[in-house]
Length: 198
Length: 268
Image (cartoon, rainbow over all chains, first blue to last red; front, side, top):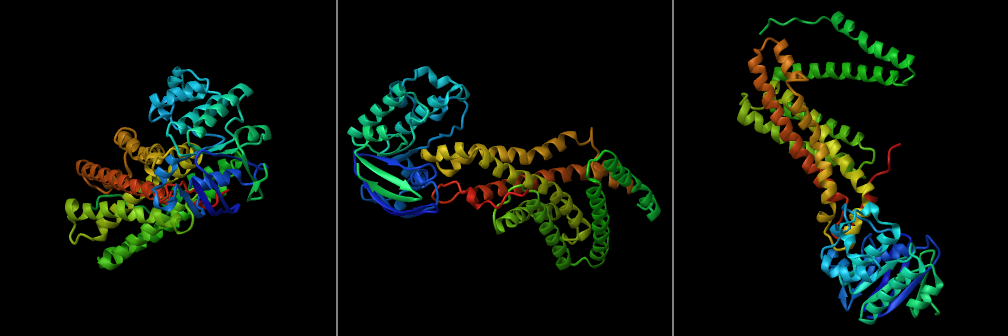
């Protein structure tokens, strides 16, 4: 259970909600309303105030790198720091089944990153975060660059992991997708986070 | 040691003709830098003239107080120059403070080391040795430190997504910044490496030629120059490492976040 109490930062009004284990909440709202700010604040990537706990453990008591392994954030435009795909994975064997589920061949390991399309990068970034086996996954438009079939593969994989106990906060512009993956919906408008009727 | 040719003011005025030729070329070719050439030239004349007066006075008194005051003044000016060379300075006091502090832990320490152990001037703070040695080390370390800081800032700025991607996957700030830090330090050390490689073939360093013009035997002048190059390399290395590490510390926080919001406004 991820519990968020009065989480706030510049551009984000105090937000409180909880994300139970094995649940997926969709986050919706216009561009620039603060969805990404909310995700970054939960992952503790920007200065923020408020109390965030995971299974009762206070975030402030957990070293930030460890926190981010437990609460993994996958941004809409993921970053890359090395030449080849494989160098971005700590534990390649663990990532292989995830990568294959996302429609990419094992050989992708040796590919130079510049050769990968935006959609391929988006799937690789998701696999990279999932390989950490996080308790909570913060997804920011994970299927924006994918065709319907690939978006379906992402949804299926994530929902399977949710059924296994992972919690997900899923930012999406697509109302149908929100309906498919989540029972609860949060809306963000002008920095104000609200629970919406499903 | 008095068999050198003295210069009169007329000799200098004759030499200045070339500055005016440069300025004239700037006007003719519409480079738009004639004003800056003339101002820079005038600044150099005034600064050196003042330095001459100060050195004369310092040499006359040989006082630890006045010598260290002059040294401190030089370090402060160098710190200001480092801050002025940044396109995107660190915000607040850090913009000026980081370079200045690093000048103290790099060049100052190396200078004192050289004066007390190698040169063994008597007293060790004798301004005739202390001030020129410090000046030469400062001038070079300043370039290295300025390059190091701007390399760090521009590296973190352009590779922000890459650094944050590592942080998001649970890397510590040290791990995430390591490639940028290495790159910044390499660019800080490049000038001194290049100048050591070229010295003696392409360029004859100012100090050595100065000593030779002053009547010192080339062999002695060469020894001095070698020592100074070692000191410069040492001062630049220590100063640049301190500056880049300090900057990296400042641009992240203890929650391992990248804090580019701590940078000052970009200069236009």
